[in-house]
Image (tube, rainbow, N blue to C red; front, side):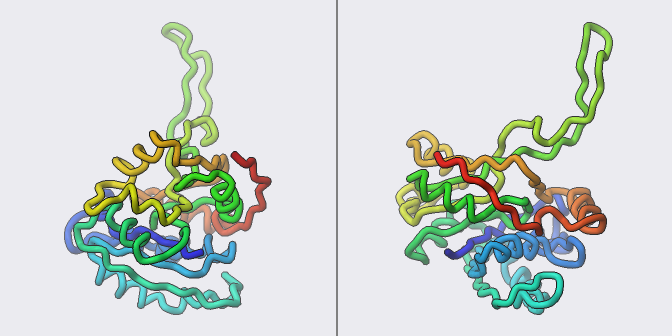
Amino acid sequence: MEVAILAGGQGRRLGVGPAAPIKALYPVAGKPLIWHVMQRFARYGYRDFCIALGHRGPELVEGIDSYSDLWCGVGPELALPQRWTVRTLHTGEQSTSGERIRQIAAYGSGPFMLAWCDGVADIDLAALEEFHRASGCLVTVAAVHPPARFGHLLLDGGYVSAFYEKHQSMAGWINGGFFVVEPEILAYLGKSPGGWEQEILPSLARDGQLAAFRHPGFWHCVDYPEDAVRLEALWRQQEPPWSQVESTEVQLP
């Protein structure tokens, strides 16, 4: 199954203007962020990739080429014996996320994995695919808990009765940016689709065609430079959670 990665957004929170970094190439541990996403899939045997380009697409291709030694998947850090297949799909400088996905679906003939270029997680991707096949839905999304950023106060009138750090698992469920998509999604995308999250996913949910694979484990996205700093710290201190292969007992829908 091919893995499509959306890498055409503007990533304004990392900076603006021609000198601003391209989010997919933002370095984490000396490697571009998109590589960290791709190596997660590769560890589960998904090694055929399509990168959907948009904003600053030619620059992204040039940046990917400069890291060509990473895509072969050899060496002690990855120990992946098989070469990755990486192709790029130019979807238009100003294309919406829905338009990029429409072109991906129109190009292929079967279901595909879909991910954003800026989020890493320790999701069991094989379990995600298994759950999707059992759901019978057109799309399955990995539901995750956002990182806890603030301490939690328990109030008693005008006093604080308890203070404790809020854990990630205490937060609600959000879209984790990992999907399995059936080609029939084209019926929802039409000729000029809008945003995937703003228009398409709500429509799927109303029609009972959006399944949720709950992932209570690690998930982290890079919106700001400090987000990458946190990932750098995890990489230095221990084997990063997004590089570990998990085996999950799937709770089928």
